[in-house]
Image (cartoon, rainbow, N blue to C red; front, side, top):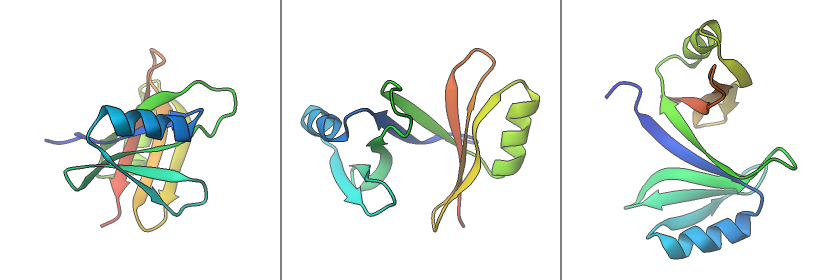
Amino acid sequence: MANAFVHVELNTTDLDKAKAFYGKLFDWTLEDVPMAQPYTLIKVGGTSAGGMLKHPMPGAPSYWLPYVGVEDIKASTANARSLGATIVVDVMEIPGIGWFSIFSDPTGATLALFQPKV
């Protein structure tokens, strides 16, 4: 399927509390990975399905952010902008992994785009 949801990420006000809750609620394996800020991978059946991190914007509420896979992150981000999206995070590299961007659509819904490094 083109442009499938490929990752979902919890931006949370309390990472430890979220890990305890979701670790008990679902049969997920939670794996802390070394990054600039604490990040926890969510693994389901041995495959990475998402992640959790402390919300990077102090005072903002916790929320889940879905990521959609794209072939050309720069073109897709520009296309979203041309269609009326507000770019929240412009194209950024995740070293060794790929690139992402985050936008709010014209109705205010937030979505992320992801292009893996090949």
